[in-house]
Image (cartoon, rainbow, N blue to C red; front, side, top):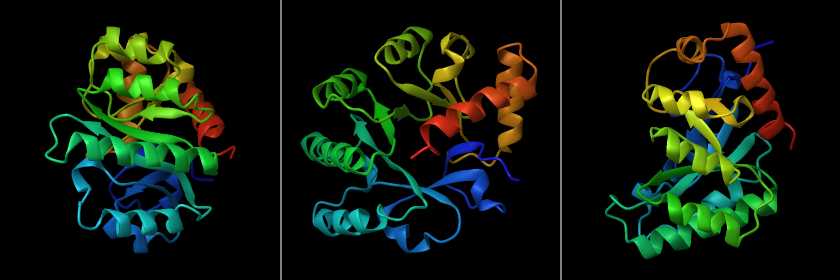
Length: 212
């Protein structure tokens, strides 16, 4: 049986259930065989179309193959109005809570706000910061606030080492690198046998994405 290893990717896998493929609103019709996360990325919020985007998202999110909501979040380097980003992000939070599935988060220069929102909503679902590249201190702050962190091709090794195994995921995001290579590299960084590291992450995936 093929393992679900990659919790966030934008590419199409030959074995679709090996990854959770992230779809943007204009891709929602592509949801067929496999696992998906669906959301409106801050970069893709279109002011004149956002309500239609949201209606489409609410419909596709009901699909049992959708394992998470997102990616969504806050990006202070994005051209989209921050106020609009915040409004849309909060709608994603409510949707994920109503469906009892995890939230995949894109956060750029907005960690304090994201942590504050998690507290505000007293969220009962897992929140996953994807593509984490921050320093170990930031990683520790997020983990202590109840977040999971997902590491891709680029990251700071000190940060990876500071994240408890039970709060960790691996992803390819937009990279073309093989997910198994990322597992091998991360296991080497943590000085663990790759099979033990993979088993630990698999347990996290089962607990967070596949139990709902």
